[in-house]
Length: 324
Image (cartoon, rainbow, N blue to C red; front, side):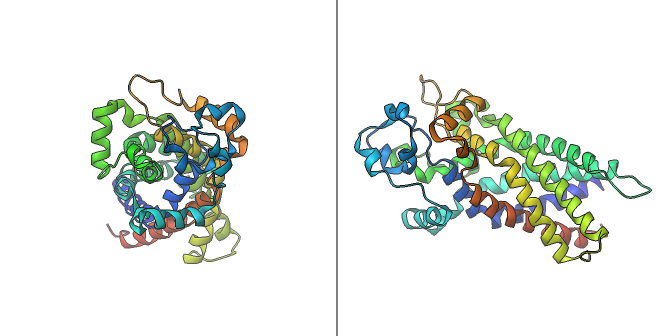
């Protein structure tokens, strides 16, 4: 019964991850807007649209005064998507999709399966009810373990999605998720595969606890109050509400995670960020507190559909595998 939960969760997660990958890519590109460049080659300013938001004490990173005057304003998700298609082609919207498949296989399969196991263990056999507090704890545990398992794929996915925004000379040009993990291990050491893992774990704990626990809670409330019957409508409403809760809870950690994972560490040079706290402080100082909610529109635009597809698919897969 325990293995079945992993299989069901894995299938639903891979389908949801692949179907919403372009939205996730746009979210990553938006979260990197305004980030201070690592180095200052002459071409860097051409692809750093949010430099206009840098404060005076960060002008040391700007190669020429004209950059500030001519830097385009920060753009929204639709404009980012259009720009990606124009500059890199439609296929670029699926950059890093192999990493998404691997990430969902490792991370989501683990967290969904563990949550299902804990749910079965902690649900009162007499009332068939699991308190919200236990749902949250189950989500925190399952999310943390799943994230630790899937972190290498997460790092590879962020880098592959962000590659197109870099100048051609600075791109990593990973051919696949396996190539990305292999190159990172060779050039930066095996430990680089767990770069930002504390952030990944924290984010996953927040997402899983808010997403899975709130889905179950919303669904139970709807059914208990007789607002809707147990069917597609209930699954869609409950999952979209759960996605909204998860987006609000996780976005700040997600922004910092994206930046830490994407940073380039040059040999012999100090890394741009010494850790999560340093990244958060530099981001807030340079771009303001609301920078932690950069990419929120594409986050909820992605988190909503992802959660809907995830749980609707999960409910259908459960029906298909109920006799196994």
